[in-house]
Image 1 (cartoon, rainbow, N blue to C red):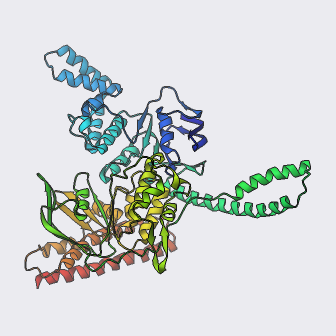
Image 2 (tube, rainbow, N blue to C red):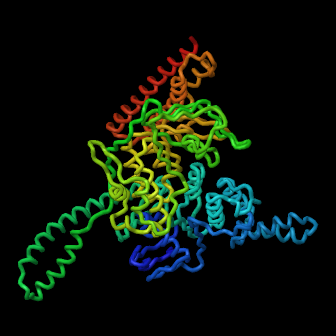
Image 3 (tube, helix red, strand yellow):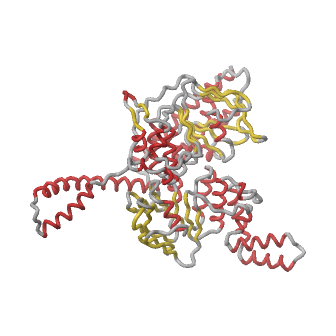
Length: 620
């Protein structure tokens, strides 16, 4: 069943053409992600679909009588309504039934009105619906129903708009960056919600794990052409790579043909036959195909930043609280050179406050933070870039620096850095106010990098960045020799970049977890079920830190990390052992599984040996 048809739409702003003659359709039960570089017009297409904008040409056709909901990046909500009033202000008939029932409860003497409201609840099966919408509000942390919209943060407004869209249970839900302003727990809940609910989706999102787990089709707008991939994100990556390789081969052939035809063109006399005129027309097409060039850049920089000394950053018994809300409570940590730390935790547990303490833009209530003399912070905050009227892209970055020094006496100019982050030479002379939201974030990132920091702090760097830019940023960070701290809800990004996690659990509790986000989820999921000799040993060797503890700070941390890692490995071992139950395994498969299993068993044995060694030190 066709829900939506987009026919040959085009959109331009002055001389800037975003897209031309774009056509696609959305059918029942499809879950489509729309992927394109920043500045290609993704948000403009969503605005056209929602009716907030109109195409210069073409049309959008919806199937009659289908219910459609939209989640914009910047929701338009009445600031004077409460959260509850905003929800009941939507045109969902069941919400009106629930609202009437709740009013009837406030006036129990009017038995006739109560009976009417009760029967309406029964008729519309509104009891289950009420349970659902309260669960949605709870999961999205919108439990204070009396709070005015004008007092909500930007993130809370986005979550309220998402809640309304989900509560309305539309036939087609159109989403613009649905995971922005959600913490990791909310994102995982939303994934499972979409898996259970029979809802057709069309979304723009940069969250690659969300793409992988939710979407069954990806539409890509690339270099003005539209491509469709019937599969999830992994399938898209595989097929896209094959397409690009195929295009490169075709471009190479076109270049060879172009060279041959160019020689013919130069040899021809002025008088042309009909046949030669046809060949001349073909020549123009060959010339166009031969000049195709992709605007994808790999970042390969041997940065010559100031080397970090032995003392990087040290937290000594640091405490911080806001009234009754404890952020840090006697926190101790010493950063080492080259560390890559991811920070995760629910909204409001103090992640951004921790970064502000680190950079000394906030002062601790107790303890001290020592920053090494050679440390040069680069701090990418959520606030973005301040736009000045009439300022061009290249002028913005040159305010912060003209070049980054590279090894062997080389350097990369501001222009070259912008090119690597997908700003063409022409784009560099555009006015900043013309940039899309994602392009502004990309420019802000360049202003941080041009200062050549050796300790990068990135607070939600992936918000509003397209997937191509994320790949560029990941390439840069993988080669970055300094320290990196990342706060992000982008699990794919975290898995690729960080070595261990600070897990903010609230009330000043911070867990240092050895591994990336996926490792942490596996460990957390295994907690209720995994049992091993480790637990039995721990009961016999229960310990706690005392003043005469014979373990060093690093050994204490190692002991804690080993316990976590053994549990994770035990989970992997159980998973692998379960695979042997497959009756279709070939002898080669069994041999490979056996080798993999032996590696895990050996790894567990090594770690348990070290674990016992550290425990024995405590008993000396």
